[in-house]
Image (cartoon, rainbow, N blue to C red):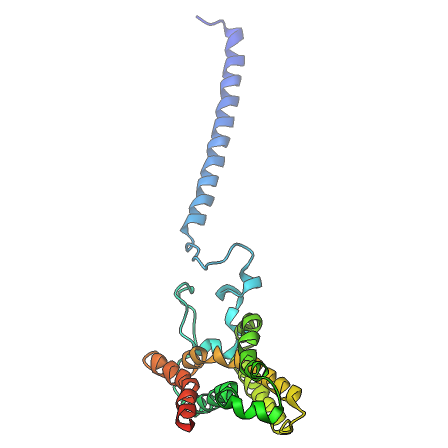
Length: 245
């Protein structure tokens, strides 16, 4: 038998421990409720960006399409793009044929200016009183300009878009042609070389456009044909030059 003097402290201790256990059980229930509420929400959708990079890179959650180039809306979505992103509806315009024809023509003109001195090298050797090596440099300058400038031209196409790149290519091509008209004199070989250099820089902006024009202006079933026609304009130059020979 437990003395009556010890009964009161034991009951008091049991009562206190029981109250603390009930409080801890209540806290545990609240934590479970909070976890349940968190799990009950919609699962986060993968968007391909690290946390905190949405606004910096332009994810759908941060309104990415608002700052994108207009031509990017017309292109097919990338395989890794986030699902559920609203894109502009694709509507084909008859102007795509005019754009393709204009590009093919000025690509043809640029390729013609590349090689038209070399096919008549003996004539220009006598006219400029220059060596064959100097006349050959009028065509080789195209290769020399392509190597260092192709990466900046590609970066410009990706960042500033199709319009600016196409205008630079056609504008420089026109400028080089006018400089050649001004260099038709026997003592102006350096001006002719400068004009060829300007056309060579224009070539760098032109050669990367066929696939971009096809992707922006043409539908999924027309991309391959449009790209082939755009490239064909550049290759038609060789046929024209062989016919002249």
